Length: 393
Image 1 (cartoon, rainbow, N blue to C red):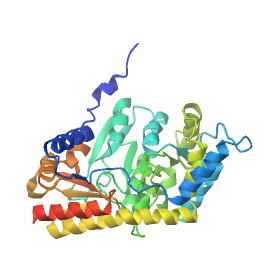
Image 2: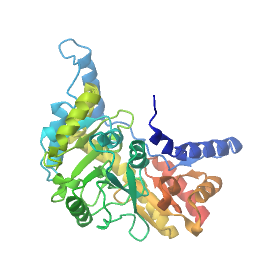
Image 3: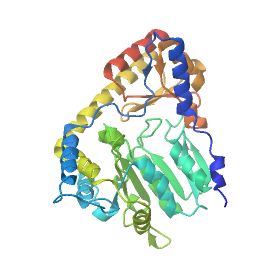
Image 4: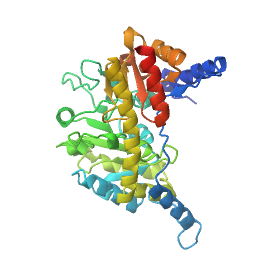
């Protein structure tokens, strides 16, 4: 018996455990101090009424013989896939039910999609980066090339045609930086992928936070993208499903490699390894895309984006460079006074009792930067900003 030794090449996932330990130790030593976390990547607003009503109704259905359901379709119930197609229609994107696959979240599919690709493909990943992109490819032993996100390009790296890559990860709005690609920039990436015969894995988990109507919320709004891109989306941050678990992946029929539709491969993979998302959850997800649900969810998103405005206004007053916050719940700031990421973390915790996420935890290019999030209580966000202003002014 032999283990997959690629797992031994993974770095310890120490970022959030180290943050947790530092915060616990500070609280033990300073029990009279209130610590406010702006580093949380989880939502805090509850599920909206339309979703709760749908979940409740579906639960009662499962308790009656006449409406009970057993195994569902691995790719998702038709009612939810139809609702998602309708949602994309409003974006000007035409999809068929067969191109939509329901999952328990974007993170799962972003890792599992690699099952349909050979391990000798070269992968292009941004730095800073959401760790799952890197770790899942290390687990398979693929060659990874990093593209540099930095202050000069506003953490939106563009393709280098001298770089030969087969799989490309793009996250827009980006986690952790909050940066968002415009249509022209995404068109350049689509052109690169088409020329290379590569596949873009497009993570659009935060698309609902885009406020600027000129910015694309789906890569399929870019001409040619259906021939080179797979899109992943999640209801976690859109609709508060972080604890409920539901997302979806779109693989167009036009996306063909080695003469085989990737849609066919993914369908085969899912029907073999996945039994689908529970009926009750899918009914709740269906309600997300109703007019009532979308209206209620829009209110929650507006709440978070007002938090983001409060944070960014503070950073502007302090003259601190940042990206994000305007079309994303994440704010990526440059640590003041040339501090390193963990140095700034300790400085904020000790002097302002505010917690964020050190950028160094997201890759080499994250050193010297810091992530704040808008997923928090309004009063605590206001208090945290007052503390930071009093500290920095």
